[in-house]
Amino acid sequence: MMSTSVTGLHNMTELVYNVTISDLENSSSLSTKTAESLRVTRLIVKQILIPIIATAGIVGNILNIIVLRNRKMRSSTNVYLSALAVCDMLYLIFTLTLSFIHCNISDQPKSAFYFIPRARVLSDLFGNTAVWLTVAFTIERYIGVCHPMRGKVWCTVGKAKILSVIVLVVSFVNTFPEFFEMDIAESSTNGTTSYSCEQTAFGKSESYSIGYYWWYVTFFTLVPFVFLFVFNSILIKSVWKANKRRHQLSNFSVVGENSRQQSEQHKVTTMLITVVLIFLLCQLPWTVLLMYRTYLDANNFLKSQTTFILISGNICNLLVIINASGNFLLYSYFSSRFRRTFAKVFCGWRKIRKTSRGTGSSRWRSSRYTSSSTTTTTSSCRSKRGTLSDSSKRLRLQTE
Image (cartoon, rainbow, N blue to C red; front, top):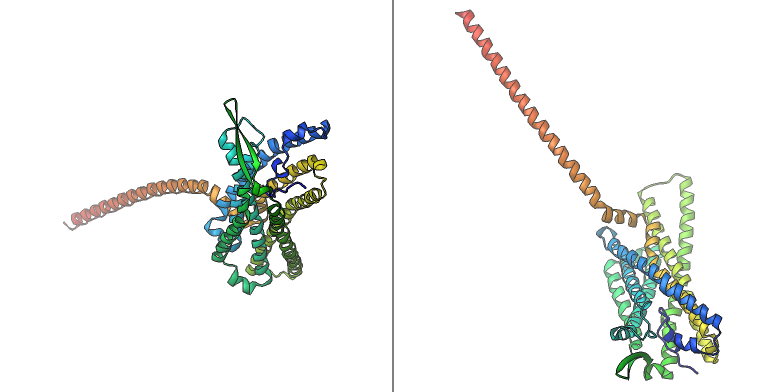
């Protein structure tokens, strides 16, 4: 049975299946049609779609970080969303880099070969951290909505920061063994040094492959999905009841500040539910594909389905990248507070500039008005003074 490589839950490459593209193209069992399908898929997905979507996602996550870190956006939920934006941004950066650097490119520099194993592990690390951050803010929102009194104690900014760091550390510990899965081999031919990516003996060992693989899939896929499904279902039911109650109250024209605040909170909850649902839709294909690959590997059917697995892996990888790139659109659509803060941060300087110009002109006008009024007052005083002196002279002549 072929050994199973763990790396690639969020960044599936040809090495995950111990088969390179060149091996596939030279294989007699592979038809010309399937090889062409694989080549076209990799061209469209890795060379066109991933660079475009990942670049847009990196920009969107940078905007998310700037807006969510604003003082007026300070909340425990936004701490998790900020950490999620950082992880998504770093994941997209490493994935975008790996779409142009491959182990089967022989003429790339030595530094590129040594960068590939580390970049693959780091992309998995930030992808895994994003998974558990999504679980964290889902549970946090559940506590805040369904247990508001406890939420005031547990759902604080300080505790959210501590929990985000804990999630990162736990994800790093569980992803750390992947650093020892792959090594770069050097070989010299006629004075020319060439490099290749090879699995280490540690990565090929059956105990590591089976034990760590199932722990990896369970901890970063099955358990998070169970948490997300359960708590998201409760939140959806809660939002549905709240909307129904608010609709009943609106018939009696009961409107107030408290009602508006509750409406905003329910919009935030709806936004987080949508984020989780899109996350599940984009991540579930990975789980299905990994399970299917494990079944094929266990029954020695993997070689006959390698092309299908590789094509499916590229498509699943694209879905994960779409998920990591689309949160900015969701925040902008659902949260009016996010839109207002974004407008103030990125468009406020124009208003300040216009205001400063208007203030300067008004001051200039007021100074002109003040000076002219002062001149008028002075001249009027002088004319009054002259009138008084003339009248006093007349009185003296009359008396004389």
